[in-house]
Image (cartoon, rainbow, N blue to C red; front, side, top):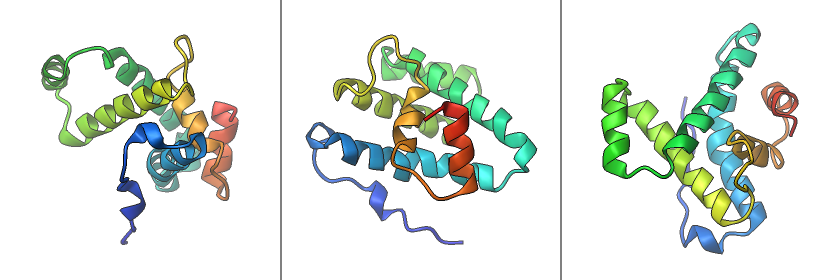
Length: 136
């Protein structure tokens, strides 16, 4: 199966993005990854998977203020593979961007980043389930 991911390549500075552009970016990247994961799992595993994504958002948020070297040491200590490192670093970037745009405030739960992407997502059973789970 081939998927066109060219929409994930962004040109320009993230600070120049509109709120809607950023939400579409979240939908096309983060939400699509979660949707694909759910699509390939039995439905009874969906809630557990979304709880794991929620924890991943919290973990990434806890690393936001650490230097890259310190984060890399933590990844090594916890035996993260390259996919998990990439997902965590991507979540850190998205959380930072959302905060710099004022879409997430200090005190908001980090999983709110998923809700932001769900605001512009529609169409599938997996998306509907995610919206109910995250109350987006």
